[in-house]
Length: 252
Length: 318
Image (cartoon, rainbow over all chains, first blue to last red; front, top):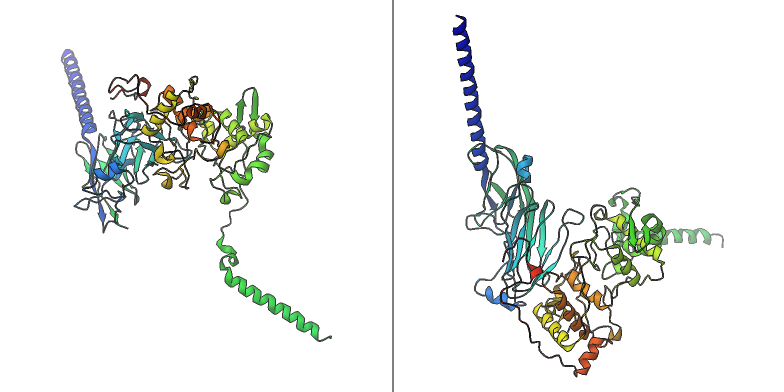
């Protein structure tokens, strides 16, 4: 009797341990896959008639005037796509990020190009300490002059970039939404760099965005548009599938 | 006689009353005092224990309190925010010490100047502005004022001054150097703002604004007759510094990324010839050549598509 009891106890213990081990390992793998696939997608729309975008007279820079002769360039303060989607809106997570996700800097190095006397892109979202490159594709000089708010972590600088010079590397030290960038030689050139911790996105011409690499959890998603400012929404990201967060701005 | 007195008295009252009504109608805003929010007493200026080090002289902020109030606050303001009572009448505006952005630096764009940079600016004054020469102050007084300026921005507590740029020895002034400088002036498009003859009338000159959106003029090299001066100093080294560090807070960018040190000296030599009435070695060389700068011919063209060694971005692209 006694030996039988002992055998049973040992077997039960092993089975239990195996069972727990199995459970634990499946949980872990589930978590990992969720972290890789979780995210937020959405569309940002403009309700109403978008404000008139003024055509830009580039006659002072003949190269650029010639480049845009067939399709004149306008200001880019409110750009609306064919389906009412709002372009150049920055989307970021303002609350709910865990420390690990917030401190992760994307390994990509985006380019801030000066082409046809315009900034490509017009709005760029960056992580704190994420390196980016400033390049000049034009056959003439530009000066790149970002104007962060005084006394913050970021400081104003102003560099000349004549044609044919190699791109230079830059980085921002602190969060700031958003740093205006201008070129003093071509006063119509305006752009913004939004510097935020954690994953970000900028809407395309359909007003769509996708924020990926987000672990499941409760977040506050915040948008920023240069003319209309910010909006926020609470979103729950579940394991395995992207959550949706749409926004609508009222035209003014 | 006796009955006239009361009449005169009421007449005076009537006149004052009418005057009062007329004034009240003419200046309705001044009549309603409740429109002005009560801000309470003016905030006290906290004099942080900031220091400056100029050679063997150490400046202390606390020691400059009365000098600052007497000589500086009228324009730069009690709080260093460039809102002194004279500021509205000035163009260009006084420096705003609360943002800690300075034009005249020996340090790269985006960094704080050295103590010596500010010390020299106080002594030199800023030509084409209302900032006078303060060379009458003792060294100690100026050093104390440099320290005092630092109390207005937290940047001075969080950051160190930038590393001053290295300036190699000046090569001799030759026509070849001037001619190369002229080629650079064209290639780097200095003329876009400063104009083809450096007279401050380039195609972009009219639209320039400083970082506070106030209109600003590019420097006119030809002005000032024989006494033309630069804002940030009058030696050739000072001119070198101006375009290699940029004048932060203004449209003048830094060219440190795009000009090699020796090329920079060539540009300095050419810029001196734009100061047409000024006596200089450069103008002597130019007049010996009957005022003609020959077109530049590159004797040692660099290998194609190879960017200068110190000009490569850290990322290693291109």
